[in-house]
Length: 95
Image (cartoon, rainbow, N blue to C red; front, side, top):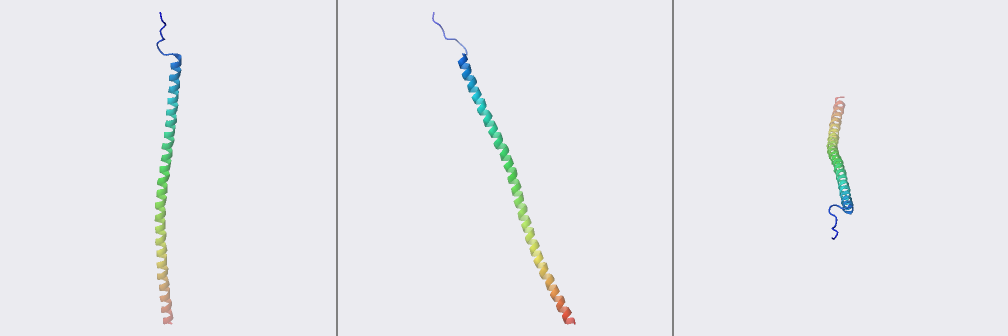
């Protein structure tokens, strides 16, 4: 009688299967870790971008307010200086 090859899983086949599964699990773990890191970093960047946009808008509003105040001050100073000149002229002519 001839000898038949053993049926089932041999220790070599089992070792190859375990090594392959270990490599797949390690690669999947690395991929999951990197995906999570990218996700949380992008969330942080989006939050910072939103803050930058808000600060830029606030900056433009503040610049507009400063320009309005400068204009108001210049106009007010001009009006008061004209009133002072008129009052000085009136007091000089009255004397």
